[in-house]
Image (cartoon, rainbow, N blue to C red; front, side):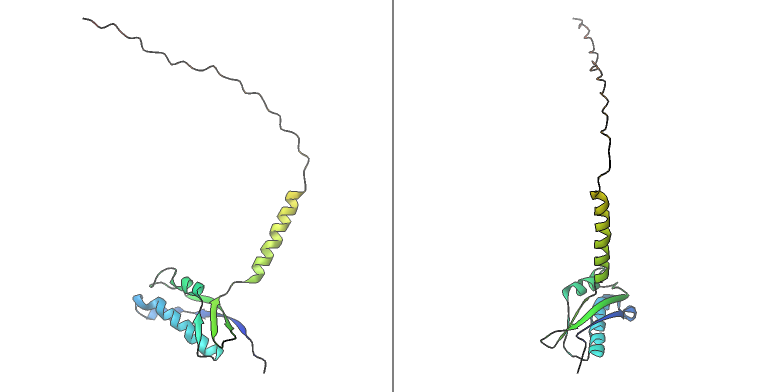
Amino acid sequence: MSQELERVYTINLGKVLLSQSQHRAVRAINMIKEFARHHMKVEDIKIEEDLAHQIWAKGVRSPPRKVRVRMSKTDEGYILVSPYEEESEKISSKKETTKIEDKVKTPKKEEPAKETPKKEEPAKETPKKEETPKKE
């Protein structure tokens, strides 16, 4: 029996807005657990701390409307729900940076910059106020 050990889902949390404002983030966590139970057919669900921080980032009243998650089955038999991080973007960004580095490594013929001597201005003397003799 071949079973996938890891799946990626986008969970719509729009119905969270139907609950009271002080219970929305808690309801979003419960909706994620319900979704995982339904799709992965396992009762024991654990949510990774990073995903919980992502849900609670804007406070209890305004959780995100959609969450992209990765659900993976562990050896202990529970489902671990973690935020999805796309790996292909990381690889493509490395390719772009290496191209830029290649351009930087090719030396261009540069003429030495000619420095023009700066003319030194004489220090300005501030005129002192002449003291007037005091009358006695």
